[in-house]
Length: 328
Ligand code: TXA
Ligand code: MG
Image (cartoon, rainbow, N blue to C red):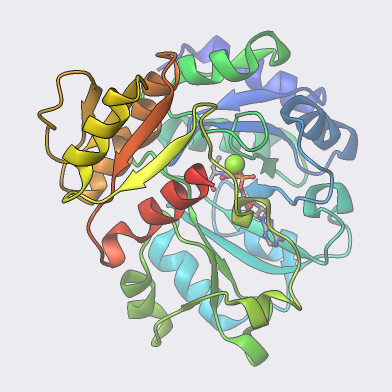
């Protein structure tokens, strides 16, 4: 935990319209005062992110819902009560005053209360001195790249471009929040825009129905979401998903062709030539290490990163989603 003066400095920077990187339980965020369009603009410039991709506004508590959103369906309150603080982002109709800069020009806003103690301390301290108290924060990486799960990753991604990086250790979840769109409830129901730290069956317990992943037809009438781009969350080294059964042959072929492979495996491969990271068969632990492991392999100057395809099932959904995009 950083000392109180680091927190004070962070709040002062946010108030002054500057950026602060901070830990959440999912990934590190690159924060700015969400009510200040000029500050929000710095996020887009620093990340190299297109201006029409909206940001999530991080709140200190559920009371912020009414300040930022309007036409809030009762189920939003139920979900917030059940899962905040936590890895759930709710998309709701925005209040008129909410700057378009933060919503990418859309009339909806993404809201979440993060669970990391340091994030909460930061947002609470900021909320105490700012009228709206929202911190806009995308993942603290360059656009399209792997999200950072340690302060060192943020430093490697954005380094000198960020005046302050708060260090809260390694993120406990390691994968981004689940994004649930409640802004089109009447027509489309609650739609998952991005699978993440909370899985669909867990959400269904509060929703009363299983939320569906936004499909192509529904997406045709919906706004764009950067985390839903086919290619995203990607290392610079090419990445391929290979099934457990074909992995040994695939690696042998690559070695014969003189290609250096790194392997992200569930079972240690016998291939002597491959640099290997073995991850847990438990999806929670797998997710926690996923991005850090991809970064390590990406830094090893390899020709190819080979990922052993994880098993099917809801608890692996978010991981499959990220690996698929990383492979594109
Ligand atoms: O876990 C997380 O969600 C992390 C931490 C820092 O909170 N944040 C994060 O932010 O992953 P970012 O910007 O990397 O991804 C947020 C996603 C983007 O794909 C964005 O398009 C979508 O949320 N989003 C935000 N507001 C939206 C809105 N109003 N409508 C639709 N999608 C929205
Ligand atoms: Mg991101």
